[in-house]
Length: 168
Image (tube, rainbow, N blue to C red; front, side, top):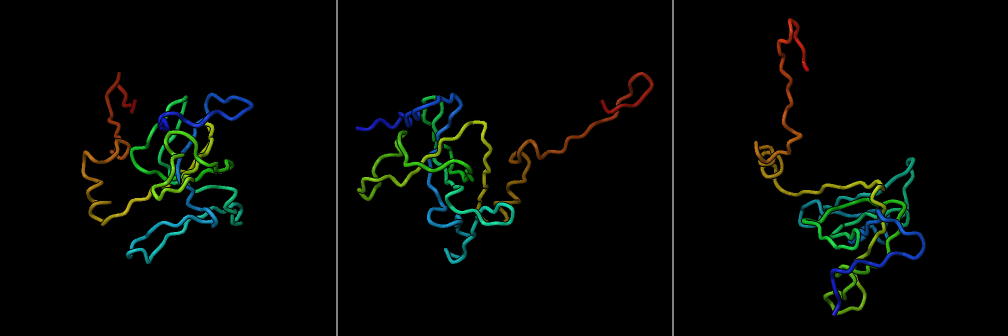
């Protein structure tokens, strides 16, 4: 039996205490883009790819990752929802640990998951993908109480302080 709470082992060589292992699926395997369903019962697809100085990046230089979980400081964590990331300068490896190296449901001996070893200070780009109708995405999302606190207006009031008005 495999313990799904054990993350991948540390690479040989220098130990980095801020190393995070991201587990997921690489969406741009064998292509330079990742494809997202844009509705129309699968007839419409949104393609996302990375360009650098107006030149198309090859799929080996970056990964569009559908992230499922991560490991940090010897512990495994699952994300509450799948999240999309663009990871640069780090190559995908076959997934090891945290239950992502188990055989697929089809009985194959290889996992469909990959992993990326990333320093916690490394820059990532998260891609937000939501699908729904206008009411659920815009109107319901802007009902007071459902908005993020940053979206509420911050106002300053004038106060009389020692004969002068100030915004402080």
